[in-house]
Figure 1 (cartoon, rainbow, N blue to C red):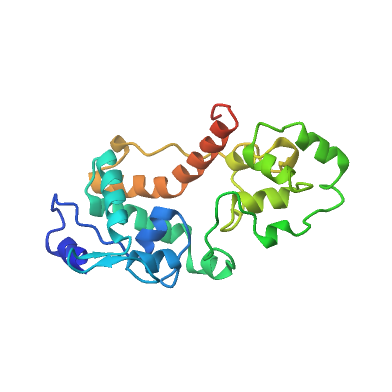
Figure 2 (figure 1 turned 120 degrees about the vertical axis):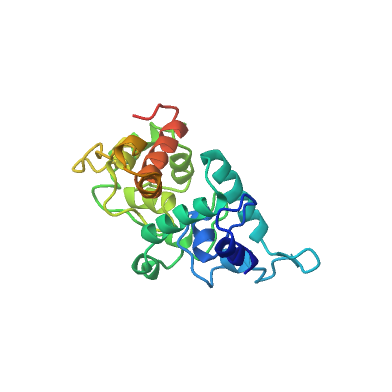
Amino acid sequence: MRNFYNNILVPNSPNGHVTIDTHAVAAALLRPLSGSSREVLHNFGGDGAASNSAQGSSGTYGLYVEAYRRAAQERGVLTRQMQSITWEAVCGLFTAGFKSQQKTWTQPRRSGEITKKERLPLTTPENSSSTLQAELKALRGTDSILDLLLERGPVTRQSYLAYNFPDGVPDPMPGELEANLPRPLQNHAAPTRSRLPDAPTRQNFHSQDEFEEALGYWQGHVGRIKAMADRASRSKGSQPR
């Protein structure tokens, strides 16, 4: 409440006041969270998270504040501006309809863990063939996730996507993400490269506010997709296309 009050009272304060609400936590973790999610409860000092009334600290709130301050500093904007940009982006990314369809996004994933759903047989005649499995095994050492799944049995496109996107597979799948799947699992009917626009530049806008609004939207949508594709490329030892 104190940060929210300060943001309204002195919005241009250099002291880094920032309101960390449900959507701010969701943006920081890039997860479709609700007010009852464990991560959000921890933010406000609930669900067993430690707080200190003498210091005025509550749960993990301070950690997110520091994260937003550092992100804002890197971009040369106020902390509350960074929160506003990412807040709007995450609301558009994880809509209420999207979140209502998710069944497992409230459960945190431990490193290397595969959920019961992902262990279920997800094979079909065309993707469980011995030829496909042989092609995937030939790629051992090039993709850590593929290596992990191969240890557990036959790998399908569905099981690979379920592990990579536990909060829901993008639909439609952006071409840049499609191109970074193991080649035998790629949907060759889809375009190999989506024509995503480059980041907006200041000279194309009349005002700084218009530019920042456009840049924030790009970072929350197009930029996120490109970053995911680039990270996938680097993890395979190749350069982004």
